Amino acid sequence: MATTLVLIQLAIVLAMIFIGARVGGIGLGIYGMIGVLILVFGFGMHPGKVPIDVMLIIVSVITATAALQAAGGLDYLVTLAARFLRKHPEQITYYGPLTTWLFCLLAGTAHTCYSLLPIISEIARKNKIRPERPITVATISASLGITGSPMSAATAAMISADILGGKGIELKDILLVCIPASFIAILVASFVQNHVGKELEKDPEYQRRLAAGLLEESKETADNNGEYAGNPRAKWAVLAFLLGVVLVVLFGSIPSLRPSFNIDGEVTRLTMPETIEIIMMSIAALILLVGKADVKKAVSGNIFGAGMNAMVSIFGIAWMGDTFFNGNLEFFRSHIADIVTQYPFLFSVALFIMSIMLFSQAATVRTLYPLGIGLGINPMALVAMFPAVNGYFFFPNYPTEVAAINFDTTGTTRIGKYVINHSFQLSGFITTFVSIAVGYLIITFLY
Image (tube, rainbow, N blue to C red; front, side, top):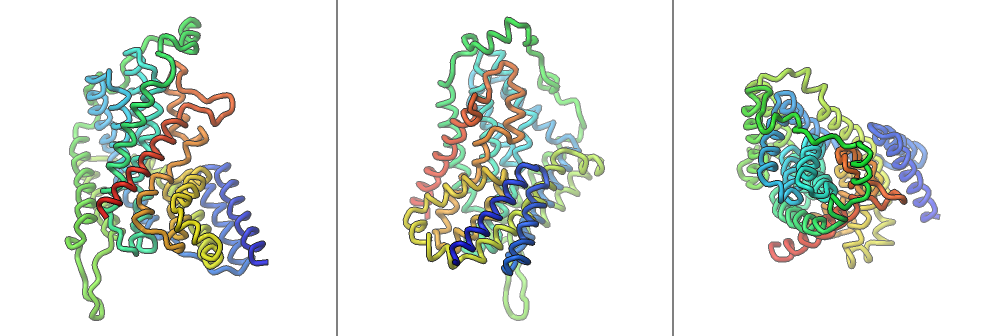
């Protein structure tokens, strides 16, 4: 009877995730909250923990990033990146993905890659390189940057007190494992991708478009051939944002630098989520000041909108997941704990599948990682599995993938007849497998 009840509840949770994903936008959060309502009022389950810290970190970081965008800082960085990439066109399959990855590491959102993808495609086409090769790895790399960025909502979720933060895992541990693991994974994927598909001039789809006159002569993009023509104070906004990143990494890596307080005779230290919130909201003010940015422009940009979507999604979907898994933790411990602890890689498979449904790394972390902690999985093993939450490339309907397909005017980046046989699968699976494997090696030798 207990098993039947858990399966019914699980079916409701998956149904809410599926419906929310189909609706898109804030749909995940809305239908996730319907799931909470059913579990609490219908089944009498105690509500799980609301991911307040993660939501507030998203607000603070996205506010700073949106201010940077309003000040022209992101456009300035794109100009610098484009200038670098055009100096090394023959290495575009390597440098393009590393650039989008670095952008995401700094900004904490994959949406920063939109401005770089057309530049990468253009450089590849001009140099007779199959655009599919660099643009697919670059798209996957942007997402991979989230699982290692000190600015991302997913990393914030990892170090929250009720997940890995409560198990002694600090920000520096995640950075030390995930950054080198993802860097190596990107290089491996780029090397493999460099040998995928026919050369551009031999590709039948490219030749068809060329013969039909569907391809215009490649033109320089709006970065004015390497010269930034926007807000002259944009570089100061960039420096202010980088200061915020450095401070977050510094306080996360050396906890003793964070203020401590004596409360009722007990000494407590400022938590990392609180530190990020204070620093990044203050940095947002600094960016607006030194960059002379319009605050109204900041909240109307796509970065702010995407961040608020993420916050609402996490509010509903993560609360539903926490309610379900914590409410049935004893059931999972008695049925699957032994298997998962003996073969922990199975949990990474669950993370991968859940991320396909949730379309969000942070929501996946908030939904499943408490279960991993409850099942007794080694916290450092959970850090190594972090890249598994990037599985939403599996279906080619994530915005960055759709944008990449459209930016490749040659048609080499495509969706296959069976939908899942699309251009991003190979790079996605390579980066996921390699980054997790390298992560395990790192924790084996360093921890």
